[in-house]
Image 1 (tube, one colour):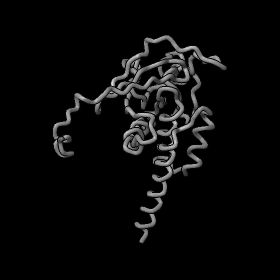
Image 2: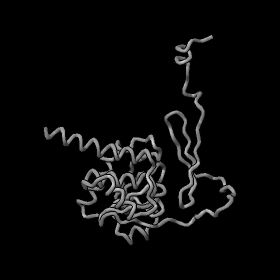
Image 3: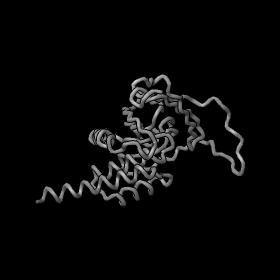
Image 4: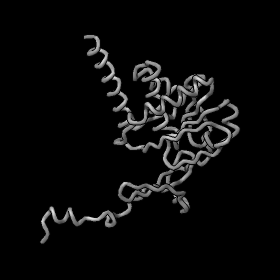
Amino acid sequence: MQSLTEEIQSFSRTRLRKQCTRVTSLSGRRIIETWKGSTITVVEDPAPPEKTLGYVPDTSWDLQVGIVKPYLLLGSQDAAHDFGTLRKHKVSHILNVAFGVENVFPDLFIYKTVSILDHPDADLLLHIQDCCDFIQQARSEKGVVLVHCNAGVSRAPAVVTGYLMSCDGQSFNDALSLVKSARPASYPNPGFLEQLKEQKKKKKKNILVNKF
């Protein structure tokens, strides 16, 4: 019988099983996220949607764009993939915080992709400064930036909330309220909300420490 140390030393990553997650966006787009070790691949789900009981899924495109600030918009991947919507709102910059979502107009808009997993344990704050810098860049260039994820429900609203707190000096409640007012579908996952609350607490603590 092998000791625990020997088992650990003989362990190989090739023995890890693949873990698959099927994701369906509000627009009806279906993708498969496959994990093996620390690697993730994202592909379109070729399987037809399962029969549903009790409700009819809405597969129409979600083109609703929330106007948070004149230069800051919030939406889903559908809005980011619809040229008419982008032109209507005079978008010049697009911040893509989804995972595995293509930037479809690279020659027409200024893009930045910051891949964030929509999971409560994902480190949202790790990416906030990078996102803030891009939004500030768009603002300084007198442009209009659309922030989007897959469904425009969790990641993108969380990033915009973080931006309003970090760069606009808003409180957590005021920032989240403004985001939800602009796009009522906004509902960041609990882990992201907790991280944003803690971010504000740490900032206040640092201000008090610096005063003394």
